[in-house]
Length: 136
Image 1 (cartoon, rainbow, N blue to C red):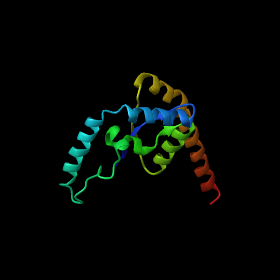
Image 2: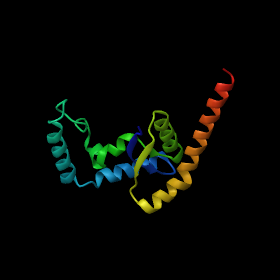
Image 3: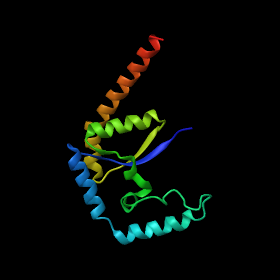
């Protein structure tokens, strides 16, 4: 079995820039559309076994991006985003369904700035595991 995670990625040069981008996205959200979505998922959640559903505890900010994509906290510097991705991988996440604000530019930025750090961190982790196995 494989596990995927929906995540909205905001990787900027500084954490402040990333948080400012998030704040701008939330401020520009179509409030009636988000409130309508909240009402719809609340109604749908009432029919689940717990009577709430998976979005019952979601904030307005969470619901701005579909499937609670901001909750993954893939927002920050390339290093912070990469570290978070590696943590999710360690928890068993096989696939991240990534969303971006400006797809073309940000996918390229992600590929150049974030993915190399992910690969480096995963390589270090593999080396650490091999080293730990050798000393057992």
